[in-house]
Length: 166
Image 1 (cartoon, helix red, strand yellow):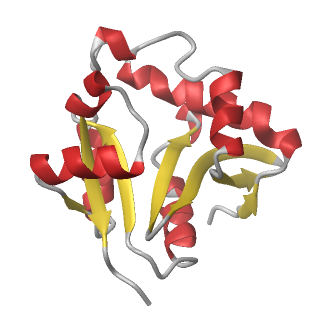
Image 2 (spheres, one colour; image 1 turned 60 degrees about the vertical axis):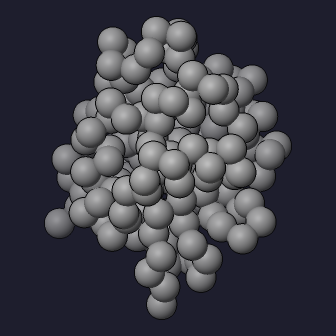
């Protein structure tokens, strides 16, 4: 059985979190619109803008090594799952599910997650965890209401909603 700890990330773990995000996001290369792909996928400046905007990053640590990260951001009446990634060498072990379940257990609000339409693996993952895919009209409205994304990113994205509590 895999032993791990779920922790709120400290500033000393931010560089490792950014490394995980950029390594795992390589899967998007060639799948998302070229206008939305850049190298690195997330810059350090963008990461710290997210932290300063209230994204609270939690992670899974195995033997003192950060292997998974997921942010949660309280935006008015919902929580947003932000930047959920597992180190490629640690994928397929249930770590994303464990981290998501940990985060969901801490809220009594509806939870939304946005991802790329082309990220069918991510959409499927969230659906197996009790999220439902929003209609295209709902997604467009929710992206405009709760996220700050470009028009091209919004057009290439979907939103999933989790309403279970307790």
